[in-house]
View 1: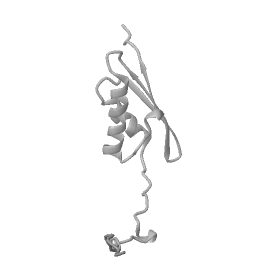
View 2: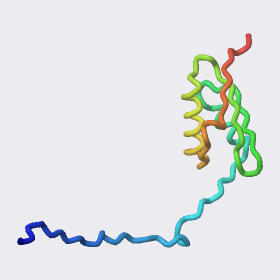
View 3: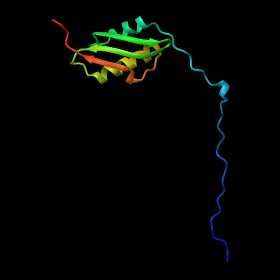
Length: 105
């Protein structure tokens, strides 16, 4: 009985250039001055006051006071974007807390 099956030819996948690990860019440490961060955060729309808590070269917490008419999620995103664009700092949104309260008389 003749073999009527199709014969398939497998070719090797195209070779990709592999970058050795020693040539990869190393992550550069980001240096910042806490009062600079607080000053820039305070410039954001709706921020009444802010405090940045750090240990060494890492941001542990950011606390912000804002009015009740400002959406907290939007404010946290604004802070994340500001730190990334202006200072090159990527921060987890869970490190930012927002307190909403009315301004005093």
